Length: 384
Image (cartoon, rainbow, N blue to C red; front, side, top):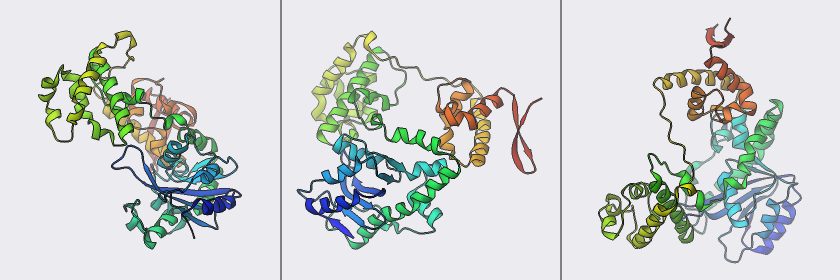
Protein backbone atom coordinates (compact mmCIF):
# COMPACT_ATOMS: atom_id res chain seq x y z
CA UNK A 1 0.00 0.00 0.00
CA UNK A 2 1.15 3.53 -0.81
CA UNK A 3 0.51 6.13 1.87
CA UNK A 4 1.31 9.36 0.07
CA UNK A 5 2.60 12.24 2.19
CA UNK A 6 4.77 14.28 -0.20
CA UNK A 7 4.49 15.69 -3.71
CA UNK A 8 7.33 13.63 -5.23
CA UNK A 9 5.75 10.40 -4.07
CA UNK A 10 2.38 11.57 -5.38
CA UNK A 11 3.91 12.38 -8.78
CA UNK A 12 5.42 8.89 -8.99
CA UNK A 13 2.17 7.22 -8.04
CA UNK A 14 0.12 9.35 -10.43
CA UNK A 15 2.49 8.61 -13.27
CA UNK A 16 1.50 4.97 -12.97
CA UNK A 17 -2.18 5.69 -12.34
CA UNK A 18 -2.29 7.79 -15.49
CA UNK A 19 -1.85 4.58 -17.53
CA UNK A 20 -4.95 2.96 -15.99
CA UNK A 21 -8.17 2.30 -17.89
CA UNK A 22 -10.29 2.86 -14.82
CA UNK A 23 -9.79 3.88 -11.20
CA UNK A 24 -11.94 3.43 -8.11
CA UNK A 25 -11.92 6.67 -6.09
CA UNK A 26 -13.32 7.69 -2.72
CA UNK A 27 -12.72 10.45 -0.19
CA UNK A 28 -13.08 10.95 3.53
CA UNK A 29 -14.06 14.41 4.73
CA UNK A 30 -15.74 16.33 7.54
CA UNK A 31 -18.14 19.28 7.25
CA UNK A 32 -20.24 19.37 10.44
CA UNK A 33 -18.66 22.63 11.60
CA UNK A 34 -17.79 24.19 8.23
CA UNK A 35 -19.52 25.45 5.10
CA UNK A 36 -16.99 23.87 2.76
CA UNK A 37 -16.24 20.16 3.20
CA UNK A 38 -12.73 19.60 4.58
CA UNK A 39 -10.92 16.95 2.54
CA UNK A 40 -9.11 14.56 4.87
CA UNK A 41 -8.22 11.56 2.71
CA UNK A 42 -8.25 10.37 -0.91
CA UNK A 43 -8.34 6.64 -1.67
CA UNK A 44 -7.53 5.22 -5.10
CA UNK A 45 -7.29 1.67 -6.47
CA UNK A 46 -6.34 0.60 -9.99
CA UNK A 47 -6.71 -3.13 -9.48
CA UNK A 48 -3.12 -3.48 -8.34
CA UNK A 49 -1.98 -0.54 -6.21
CA UNK A 50 -3.80 0.54 -3.06
CA UNK A 51 -3.17 4.24 -2.63
CA UNK A 52 -4.07 6.63 0.16
CA UNK A 53 -3.29 10.31 -0.35
CA UNK A 54 -3.15 12.48 2.76
CA UNK A 55 -4.16 16.04 1.75
CA UNK A 56 -3.72 17.29 5.32
CA UNK A 57 0.06 16.99 5.07
CA UNK A 58 1.50 20.49 4.87
CA UNK A 59 3.03 21.31 1.48
CA UNK A 60 1.47 18.39 -0.43
CA UNK A 61 0.55 19.58 -3.94
CA UNK A 62 -2.44 17.67 -5.31
CA UNK A 63 -2.01 18.86 -8.91
CA UNK A 64 -0.68 15.49 -10.19
CA UNK A 65 -3.86 13.83 -8.94
CA UNK A 66 -6.10 16.59 -10.29
CA UNK A 67 -4.58 16.00 -13.75
CA UNK A 68 -5.73 12.39 -13.54
CA UNK A 69 -9.24 13.54 -12.69
CA UNK A 70 -9.20 15.61 -15.90
CA UNK A 71 -7.96 12.72 -18.05
CA UNK A 72 -10.95 11.71 -20.17
CA UNK A 73 -9.32 8.40 -21.12
CA UNK A 74 -9.62 7.06 -17.57
CA UNK A 75 -12.97 6.00 -16.07
CA UNK A 76 -13.33 7.30 -12.50
CA UNK A 77 -15.58 5.03 -10.45
CA UNK A 78 -17.43 6.51 -7.47
CA UNK A 79 -20.29 5.29 -5.32
CA UNK A 80 -22.72 8.08 -4.45
CA UNK A 81 -20.05 10.44 -5.71
CA UNK A 82 -21.86 13.77 -5.46
CA UNK A 83 -20.05 14.96 -2.34
CA UNK A 84 -16.70 13.67 -3.59
CA UNK A 85 -17.16 15.53 -6.86
CA UNK A 86 -18.26 18.64 -4.97
CA UNK A 87 -14.98 18.60 -3.06
CA UNK A 88 -12.88 18.28 -6.22
CA UNK A 89 -14.93 20.94 -7.98
CA UNK A 90 -14.46 23.38 -5.08
CA UNK A 91 -10.71 22.80 -5.20
CA UNK A 92 -10.23 22.93 -8.99
CA UNK A 93 -13.42 24.49 -10.44
CA UNK A 94 -13.51 21.49 -12.78
CA UNK A 95 -15.74 18.43 -12.85
CA UNK A 96 -13.76 15.18 -13.06
CA UNK A 97 -13.98 13.62 -16.52
CA UNK A 98 -15.51 10.26 -17.42
CA UNK A 99 -17.35 9.51 -14.17
CA UNK A 100 -19.17 6.27 -13.40
CA UNK A 101 -21.36 6.21 -10.30
CA UNK A 102 -22.25 2.71 -9.09
CA UNK A 103 -25.12 3.94 -6.92
CA UNK A 104 -26.85 5.47 -9.95
CA UNK A 105 -26.12 2.33 -11.95
CA UNK A 106 -27.56 0.19 -9.16
CA UNK A 107 -30.76 2.25 -9.07
CA UNK A 108 -31.15 1.83 -12.83
CA UNK A 109 -30.68 -1.93 -12.37
CA UNK A 110 -33.29 -2.30 -9.62
CA UNK A 111 -31.17 -2.47 -6.46
CA UNK A 112 -33.51 -0.06 -4.70
CA UNK A 113 -33.53 3.65 -3.93
CA UNK A 114 -30.08 5.11 -3.19
CA UNK A 115 -28.56 1.79 -2.14
CA UNK A 116 -25.67 2.11 0.29
CA UNK A 117 -22.16 0.94 -0.50
CA UNK A 118 -22.09 -1.79 2.18
CA UNK A 119 -25.41 -3.20 0.96
CA UNK A 120 -24.26 -3.27 -2.67
CA UNK A 121 -20.98 -4.98 -1.70
CA UNK A 122 -22.99 -7.58 0.19
CA UNK A 123 -25.41 -8.22 -2.67
CA UNK A 124 -22.91 -8.29 -5.54
CA UNK A 125 -19.77 -9.64 -3.87
CA UNK A 126 -21.14 -11.51 -0.86
CA UNK A 127 -18.69 -9.65 1.39
CA UNK A 128 -19.12 -7.69 4.60
CA UNK A 129 -17.49 -4.39 5.49
CA UNK A 130 -16.44 -3.52 9.04
CA UNK A 131 -18.45 -0.33 9.66
CA UNK A 132 -16.94 0.58 13.02
CA UNK A 133 -14.60 3.20 11.52
CA UNK A 134 -17.28 4.83 9.37
CA UNK A 135 -18.02 7.68 11.79
CA UNK A 136 -14.43 8.35 12.75
CA UNK A 137 -12.93 11.84 12.80
CA UNK A 138 -10.85 11.65 9.65
CA UNK A 139 -8.97 14.85 10.45
CA UNK A 140 -7.17 13.27 13.40
CA UNK A 141 -3.62 12.05 12.85
CA UNK A 142 -2.09 9.55 12.96
CA UNK A 143 -4.69 7.22 11.46
CA UNK A 144 -4.88 3.74 12.92
CA UNK A 145 -4.30 0.63 10.84
CA UNK A 146 -8.00 -0.19 11.25
CA UNK A 147 -9.00 3.22 9.86
CA UNK A 148 -6.65 2.86 6.91
CA UNK A 149 -7.94 -0.63 6.10
CA UNK A 150 -11.53 0.61 6.27
CA UNK A 151 -10.75 3.56 3.99
CA UNK A 152 -8.99 1.48 1.36
CA UNK A 153 -11.75 -1.17 1.36
CA UNK A 154 -14.08 1.53 0.00
CA UNK A 155 -12.18 1.45 -3.30
CA UNK A 156 -10.98 -2.15 -3.55
CA UNK A 157 -14.55 -3.47 -3.43
CA UNK A 158 -15.72 -0.64 -5.66
CA UNK A 159 -13.22 -1.76 -8.29
CA UNK A 160 -14.74 -5.26 -8.19
CA UNK A 161 -18.31 -3.96 -8.38
CA UNK A 162 -17.73 -1.81 -11.46
CA UNK A 163 -17.55 -4.55 -14.17
CA UNK A 164 -20.46 -6.44 -12.60
CA UNK A 165 -22.81 -3.47 -12.47
CA UNK A 166 -21.66 -2.26 -15.88
CA UNK A 167 -22.52 -5.64 -17.41
CA UNK A 168 -25.98 -5.46 -15.85
CA UNK A 169 -26.52 -2.03 -17.40
CA UNK A 170 -25.44 -3.30 -20.83
CA UNK A 171 -27.36 -6.58 -20.65
CA UNK A 172 -30.53 -4.75 -19.65
CA UNK A 173 -29.95 -2.14 -22.38
CA UNK A 174 -30.03 0.69 -19.86
CA UNK A 175 -27.00 2.66 -21.07
CA UNK A 176 -29.13 5.60 -22.20
CA UNK A 177 -31.00 5.60 -18.87
CA UNK A 178 -27.72 5.68 -16.97
CA UNK A 179 -26.29 8.46 -19.12
CA UNK A 180 -29.40 10.57 -18.57
CA UNK A 181 -28.98 10.31 -14.79
CA UNK A 182 -25.23 10.89 -14.81
CA UNK A 183 -25.69 14.22 -16.64
CA UNK A 184 -27.06 15.75 -13.45
CA UNK A 185 -24.08 14.49 -11.46
CA UNK A 186 -21.54 16.02 -13.84
CA UNK A 187 -23.32 19.34 -14.39
CA UNK A 188 -21.59 22.42 -12.97
CA UNK A 189 -25.02 23.73 -12.00
CA UNK A 190 -25.18 20.96 -9.41
CA UNK A 191 -22.16 22.39 -7.58
CA UNK A 192 -22.21 26.13 -8.30
CA UNK A 193 -23.50 27.68 -5.08
CA UNK A 194 -24.65 31.07 -6.33
CA UNK A 195 -25.74 33.24 -3.36
CA UNK A 196 -28.30 34.94 -5.64
CA UNK A 197 -30.17 31.64 -5.87
CA UNK A 198 -29.90 30.61 -2.22
CA UNK A 199 -33.48 31.73 -1.42
CA UNK A 200 -34.78 28.91 -3.61
CA UNK A 201 -33.80 26.27 -1.05
CA UNK A 202 -36.01 27.86 1.62
CA UNK A 203 -39.58 26.71 2.22
CA UNK A 204 -41.44 29.97 1.72
CA UNK A 205 -45.20 30.44 1.74
CA UNK A 206 -47.74 33.27 1.76
CA UNK A 207 -45.19 36.00 1.05
CA UNK A 208 -46.14 39.52 -0.01
CA UNK A 209 -43.93 41.77 -2.17
CA UNK A 210 -41.85 43.12 0.72
CA UNK A 211 -41.46 39.67 2.27
CA UNK A 212 -40.18 38.17 -0.98
CA UNK A 213 -37.50 40.84 -1.29
CA UNK A 214 -36.45 40.35 2.34
CA UNK A 215 -36.28 36.58 1.93
CA UNK A 216 -34.09 36.90 -1.15
CA UNK A 217 -31.70 39.42 0.41
CA UNK A 218 -31.41 37.65 3.77
CA UNK A 219 -30.74 34.29 2.11
CA UNK A 220 -28.11 35.86 -0.15
CA UNK A 221 -26.45 37.67 2.75
CA UNK A 222 -26.39 34.50 4.86
CA UNK A 223 -24.87 32.45 2.04
CA UNK A 224 -22.08 34.97 1.49
CA UNK A 225 -21.36 35.23 5.23
CA UNK A 226 -21.31 31.45 5.65
CA UNK A 227 -18.92 31.06 2.72
CA UNK A 228 -16.62 33.85 3.96
CA UNK A 229 -16.48 32.50 7.51
CA UNK A 230 -16.58 28.85 6.40
CA UNK A 231 -19.34 27.93 8.84
CA UNK A 232 -22.71 26.18 8.34
CA UNK A 233 -25.55 28.47 7.26
CA UNK A 234 -27.35 27.94 10.56
CA UNK A 235 -24.37 29.39 12.42
CA UNK A 236 -25.11 32.73 10.76
CA UNK A 237 -28.89 32.67 11.01
CA UNK A 238 -31.35 29.79 11.11
CA UNK A 239 -34.15 29.26 8.61
CA UNK A 240 -36.90 29.87 11.17
CA UNK A 241 -35.31 33.21 12.08
CA UNK A 242 -35.35 34.25 8.41
CA UNK A 243 -39.06 33.40 8.17
CA UNK A 244 -39.82 35.45 11.29
CA UNK A 245 -37.82 38.41 9.99
CA UNK A 246 -39.75 38.26 6.70
CA UNK A 247 -43.01 38.32 8.61
CA UNK A 248 -42.21 40.87 11.35
CA UNK A 249 -39.97 43.14 9.21
CA UNK A 250 -38.30 44.88 12.20
CA UNK A 251 -37.22 48.48 11.61
CA UNK A 252 -34.65 48.90 14.37
CA UNK A 253 -32.67 47.12 17.09
CA UNK A 254 -35.53 47.31 19.59
CA UNK A 255 -37.94 45.63 17.17
CA UNK A 256 -35.35 42.95 16.54
CA UNK A 257 -34.79 42.36 20.24
CA UNK A 258 -38.49 41.64 20.68
CA UNK A 259 -38.47 38.78 18.20
CA UNK A 260 -38.63 35.26 19.58
CA UNK A 261 -35.95 33.94 17.22
CA UNK A 262 -33.54 36.71 18.18
CA UNK A 263 -33.65 35.66 21.83
CA UNK A 264 -33.56 31.91 21.20
CA UNK A 265 -30.11 30.46 21.66
CA UNK A 266 -28.39 29.66 18.35
CA UNK A 267 -31.08 31.23 16.15
CA UNK A 268 -29.48 34.60 15.46
CA UNK A 269 -26.07 36.05 16.24
CA UNK A 270 -26.39 39.50 17.80
CA UNK A 271 -23.19 40.68 16.14
CA UNK A 272 -25.15 40.82 12.88
CA UNK A 273 -27.96 43.05 14.23
CA UNK A 274 -27.11 46.21 12.27
CA UNK A 275 -26.42 44.30 9.08
CA UNK A 276 -29.74 42.50 9.30
CA UNK A 277 -31.71 45.75 9.69
CA UNK A 278 -29.99 47.11 6.56
CA UNK A 279 -30.65 43.88 4.64
CA UNK A 280 -34.34 44.04 5.56
CA UNK A 281 -34.57 47.64 4.33
CA UNK A 282 -32.82 46.65 1.12
CA UNK A 283 -35.22 43.76 0.56
CA UNK A 284 -38.27 45.97 1.14
CA UNK A 285 -37.00 48.55 -1.35
CA UNK A 286 -36.77 46.14 -4.30
CA UNK A 287 -39.26 47.13 -6.97
CA UNK A 288 -42.02 44.68 -7.74
CA UNK A 289 -41.01 44.25 -11.39
CA UNK A 290 -37.50 43.19 -10.35
CA UNK A 291 -38.69 40.45 -8.01
CA UNK A 292 -38.76 36.87 -9.32
CA UNK A 293 -42.16 35.44 -10.10
CA UNK A 294 -42.87 32.94 -7.37
CA UNK A 295 -45.58 30.43 -8.10
CA UNK A 296 -48.05 30.21 -5.22
CA UNK A 297 -48.20 26.86 -3.48
CA UNK A 298 -50.86 24.74 -5.04
CA UNK A 299 -53.81 23.85 -2.86
CA UNK A 300 -54.25 20.18 -3.51
CA UNK A 301 -57.86 19.16 -4.20
CA UNK A 302 -59.73 16.86 -1.84
CA UNK A 303 -59.20 13.20 -2.64
CA UNK A 304 -55.81 13.56 -4.31
CA UNK A 305 -54.11 11.36 -1.70
CA UNK A 306 -56.19 8.33 -2.66
CA UNK A 307 -55.49 8.92 -6.36
CA UNK A 308 -51.76 9.17 -5.67
CA UNK A 309 -51.96 5.94 -3.66
CA UNK A 310 -53.56 4.16 -6.61
CA UNK A 311 -50.84 5.46 -8.96
CA UNK A 312 -48.31 4.24 -6.42
CA UNK A 313 -49.62 0.71 -6.95
CA UNK A 314 -48.96 1.09 -10.68
CA UNK A 315 -45.50 2.51 -9.91
CA UNK A 316 -44.71 -0.45 -7.65
CA UNK A 317 -45.68 -2.83 -10.43
CA UNK A 318 -43.66 -1.05 -13.12
CA UNK A 319 -40.63 -0.73 -10.84
CA UNK A 320 -40.68 -4.46 -10.15
CA UNK A 321 -41.32 -5.39 -13.78
CA UNK A 322 -38.43 -3.32 -15.16
CA UNK A 323 -36.10 -3.75 -12.22
CA UNK A 324 -35.52 -0.04 -11.62
CA UNK A 325 -35.75 1.97 -8.39
CA UNK A 326 -39.09 3.70 -7.85
CA UNK A 327 -37.38 6.91 -6.78
CA UNK A 328 -35.73 7.11 -10.19
CA UNK A 329 -39.07 6.88 -12.01
CA UNK A 330 -41.26 9.14 -9.89
CA UNK A 331 -41.56 10.57 -6.39
CA UNK A 332 -44.66 11.66 -4.48
CA UNK A 333 -44.59 15.19 -5.92
CA UNK A 334 -44.34 13.78 -9.46
CA UNK A 335 -47.39 11.62 -8.85
CA UNK A 336 -49.32 14.59 -7.44
CA UNK A 337 -48.45 16.71 -10.47
CA UNK A 338 -49.46 13.88 -12.78
CA UNK A 339 -52.85 13.55 -11.07
CA UNK A 340 -53.42 17.29 -11.56
CA UNK A 341 -52.17 17.56 -15.15
CA UNK A 342 -51.67 14.99 -17.94
CA UNK A 343 -48.96 17.24 -19.42
CA UNK A 344 -47.20 18.33 -16.24
CA UNK A 345 -43.59 19.44 -16.64
CA UNK A 346 -42.08 16.57 -14.66
CA UNK A 347 -39.34 14.03 -15.36
CA UNK A 348 -41.90 11.19 -15.18
CA UNK A 349 -43.51 12.34 -18.43
CA UNK A 350 -40.23 12.54 -20.36
CA UNK A 351 -37.75 10.16 -21.98
CA UNK A 352 -37.47 6.57 -20.81
CA UNK A 353 -39.66 7.24 -17.75
CA UNK A 354 -42.58 8.15 -20.00
CA UNK A 355 -42.12 5.00 -22.04
CA UNK A 356 -42.17 2.60 -19.12
CA UNK A 357 -44.47 4.40 -16.66
CA UNK A 358 -45.64 7.91 -17.58
CA UNK A 359 -47.82 6.91 -20.54
CA UNK A 360 -49.38 4.03 -18.62
CA UNK A 361 -50.06 6.33 -15.67
CA UNK A 362 -51.83 8.88 -17.88
CA UNK A 363 -53.83 6.12 -19.63
CA UNK A 364 -54.77 4.61 -16.27
CA UNK A 365 -55.78 8.00 -14.91
CA UNK A 366 -58.06 8.53 -17.91
CA UNK A 367 -59.65 5.09 -17.72
CA UNK A 368 -57.96 3.61 -20.79
CA UNK A 369 -56.30 0.81 -18.85
CA UNK A 370 -57.05 -0.88 -15.54
CA UNK A 371 -55.05 -2.64 -12.86
CA UNK A 372 -56.20 -6.15 -12.01
CA UNK A 373 -55.03 -9.19 -10.09
CA UNK A 374 -54.68 -12.32 -12.19
CA UNK A 375 -53.00 -15.53 -11.04
CA UNK A 376 -51.60 -13.71 -8.00
CA UNK A 377 -49.98 -11.09 -10.24
CA UNK A 378 -50.78 -7.45 -10.89
CA UNK A 379 -51.57 -6.97 -14.57
CA UNK A 380 -52.58 -4.04 -16.77
CA UNK A 381 -55.47 -4.49 -19.18
CA UNK A 382 -56.87 -2.15 -21.81
CA UNK A 383 -60.45 -1.11 -21.11
CA UNK A 384 -62.94 -2.07 -23.80
